[in-house]
Every structure is written in structure tokens, then in C-alpha cells.
Image (cartoon, rainbow over all chains, first blue to last red; front, side, top):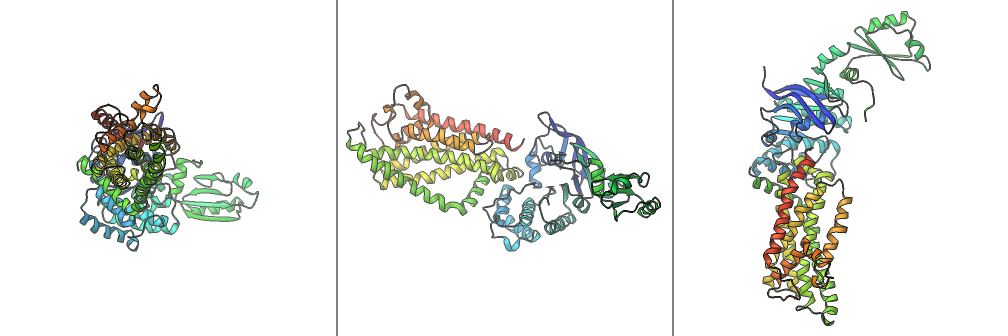
Amino acid sequence: MRESIVQARGLTKKFGDFVAVDAIDFDIVKGEAFGFLGPNGAGKTSTMKMITTVSPITEGKLTVLGLDPTTQGRSIRQRIGVVPQEDNLDLELTVAENLYVYGRYHDMSRADIRRRTTELLEFAQLTDRAKSTVEPLSGGMKRRLTIARALINDPELVILDEPTTGLDPQARHVLWDRLYRLKQQGATLIITTHYMDEAEQLCDRLVVMDKGVIAAEGSPRELIAEYAPREVVELRFEDGQQDQAVLKLDGLAHRSEVLADRVLLYTDDAEATQHHMSERGIHPEQVLVRRSTLEDVFLRLTGRRLID
Amino acid sequence: MTVLTRSIRVVEAELVTYRRTWRGTVISSFVNPVLFLSAMGLGLGSLVDTSGADLAISYLAFVASGLMAATAMQAGASEGAFPVMAGIKWRKEFHATITTPLGPADIVYGRFLWSIIRLSFILVVFALISVLFGALEVGPALLAVPPGVLTGVAFTTVVTAFTVTQEDETSLSTLFRFGITPLFLFSGTFFPISQLPDFIKPIAYATPLFHGVELVRKIALPGVDHSVVTSLPIWVHICYLVAMTAVGLWLAPKLLDRRLRP
């Protein structure tokens, strides 16, 4: 068994009567990218805050890098990097100065910071912006700088709370590429996200959290295999035809889901399903067959409700 | 890292920021005393000095010494209010700081040290301008800088403790409007406390700026008589201000911890 970096047993966080994290267990091992996937309010951020020692544990047991966050928070923080959900860079300072201040907080020498800054700006593709103030940078650049800042102390564990929320698709892909490299260099990553594609791209293993508990755990592949059949057939009908067609769908797939504008059929064999469909005289206007994704797992587990 | 090293790291961060923003603050450090001493000291002073007021020194000297303490209070209180609210709520940099080996207490102690540096600069400028105006002698004026700094940091620490419990800036403007401004006007800066009605005097004696003003005057105006200052010994003022600073330094880290690490 590989070295455990974070271990939680019955980890609980309460704010008054509200239980944000409800007795969860998980193990994160060295070198993996571990994801916390869940809707807003699932307890992901509260869990991250306990791991990064900036929020006290209400109940249960947590060890980070073999240390106790309650009594050894400072030693833990010395060895981790934290990318918060909201950028909290110093906007008045330059890109390089932001790294400098953080490096000093980590008790690094000026020479070390200078060396590390060069590397990190390269990594974050911000070298030509080193002397620019942060304020006018794009969202993607700020995010990359926040990640670079988290890496100044060469952390063993990097915690990223929704790293790509609010970024445009291009900026997200650049960021994924950087995080992938980071993982290749041997860092352990903890990532929270509500984007399924992100979890699928980046995470070796993940847990799906909902209402403070862990609803499922495994690799993206395992979760898809367990909670969603291999393929999804999406049917769109002409106006007013859907309700009638739905009545004839019984038994065509493992599971079907009727949405306002389309019907989803979860099946192991899309071809056979389509065949049976035409046998029954169902002729949708549009048929789309796709592989099932983590999104299907997620929706299956957490439901298609609106979370504010 | 010891707590002192960690606090100095916070000062370093302030210095890096200050390198970008110093121009505006330096100008106000010069302009503020010049405006006040011209208007109150020279303008109003010419009226007071010829009206047969029972004051042993020129009104200019009286106001200059009082304003050193009052200016320290305003600058000190501001340091404890707006940058702290910014760190928690507007720019949120405190939330970033506490994910490093530094903690909430280091932020408070570091900002306390930074306030000492800022106030020292502001008060040295104030003292020198007072000398140029002929209000104070250079030696006593500079000797009055440390008591002025003490007055200022007493406000920095207590206002910091207050600010970290507040949701937003509305309460900060309330604090300045109903706390700092009345103190500025009624703590003996512009007229001796002995002019106040008897039933209000005890209230004045209880306020922190009164002790700051008294302390600064007793040092900046050596040998001045009791028409200008009270007969309270210097150590009373020092103890008051040190105690106030200590209370702030004790409370603020706990309250900031509660705010940043819920």
C-alpha cells in the first residue's frame, strides 16, 4: 500500500446546527490526483478548509502528511499549497511581488524566491507579465498566478478548490494542461469541482459528495461502470409527440429519464435499443448516441434538482 | 519561525505594497499639519491670543501639541479599520496569508508593528512642521513623537479588534462619526478640558485621547503650567495607553481567528 497523505475518519464539520460535512471517511495516497465532486453546498469546500487547517474540525479524526491539523497546523501549511476558490491575490502588487510576499511568508530566502519565481512564471506562462500589476490580468492569468503562488514552497500536496470555475473553455484547457504536468512531476493533488469533464480529465480517484456525505467513491471509469450503463441514447421528438412516445419506452433500457426537451435512455447496447425502438414504432425527430460520462453518474447520485 | 519573525514578514509585505502607494500618503502627511496649523494655529490663534484667554502659552503651541496626539489617533484608528476590513472582506488577502505558516495572530502583531512605523513617520513630519511654524522647540517636539505613537497604536489595536467583528464598512464610518470625531473635538485638543462643565469632565478624563493629548503636551511643552495641562502624573497617561494597547493586542488575534477560521 502506498503512503497515505490525507486520512479522514468520521470527519465532521458543523456550523451551529447545520452539518456541512457529516462523518466522512477517505484516504488520499501519495502521487494521486483525488477529486471531490459535488453540487454547491455539498461540503467540498468545508472539507478542503479542514485539510488546509484553516477551519477547525468539529468531530472525527483527520491526519494530513501524518500530522494533526489541530495542533500542528503551521507545520502542515509549510508543506502544502492552497489554491482557494476565489482569487485573493494582491491586486496592487506585480505578478512577481505576489510570489515574493508568499515566499517570505514561507520563510524562504530572497535568492530561493528569485530562482523559484523564474521557474514558476515559466510554468504558469506568465514570464512576460512578471512586472505587470495583477489588476489588469485576465481571469485565466490570475488563476494561473494563484496556482504558481501556491507552488512557491514546492509543496508535497496541492489543494485546489474549484480551480477552473468562471474561466472560459480555452483558459480551462490551459489550466488542465498545467495541472496534468504538476501531477507528472509527482505532486499529490486534491481537486474539488462541479465540472464532470474536469474530474474525468484530472482525477485518478474521486468521491461524489452530496449533502455532506460521500455518495460514491472510485475511479472515473469505475463510477461510470457502476452507476451508469455504457451508452446513452438521447431522443428528441417533434413538438407534442414526446408524451405519447414515453408511454412506449418501458423496458427498452436499464433506466430512462424524461426531461422537458428530450428523453435519455441508459443502455449497454445502443444499437439494440434503437432497433427495439423502431420495432415499437417510436420515431424520434433526432437520435444521439453517446458514451455515458461522469455527469450521468453525478446526476444519478445527486439528482437533477436545482441547487442555489 | 518565531512569532516575531512571522510578524516581521507581515511588515515586509506591507512595505512591498507601500512601495507602490507611498506617494499619496506622504503628501497627506505634509499637507495635513500645514493646513491645520495655518487655520487653527495661526488663524484662530490670533483671535484667541488677543482675547485675553487664560492660557500660559500661545494658542499655536497649544493646538500643535494637541494635534500631534489627535493626528496619531486618527491615523492609528484608520490603520486598524480600513486595511483590516480590506484584508478580511474586500481584497481578502488575510485569507491567503493564513494558508501559509502565518496565522491570524501574526497578522495582528505584524500590522501593529507596521502601524508603529507609519505613525512614527507621520508624527516626525508633524513635529518638524510644528517647529517650522514656530509652535514647538525641536527637541521636545521630537521627544513627543514616541508618546504620540503610543496614542496611535492604542487606537490601532482596539479598532482592529472592533473591525474584525464587523460585517461591513457601515459600522466603520459609524465608529469614525460617533467615536473618533467627538474624541478629536472634545479631548482637549482645541481647548483645555478645564473649560468643560464640571459634570462632563470625568467623561473627558476617561477617554483615551485625553490621555494622549496630556502626555504629548507634558513632553512637547516642558514646564507648562496647569492652565494648559492637568496635574495628573505622566505615568497615569502611559499606563492608560499601554493598557489599552495590550487589551487590543490580546483581543484582536482571538477575534480575527474566529472571523478567518470559522
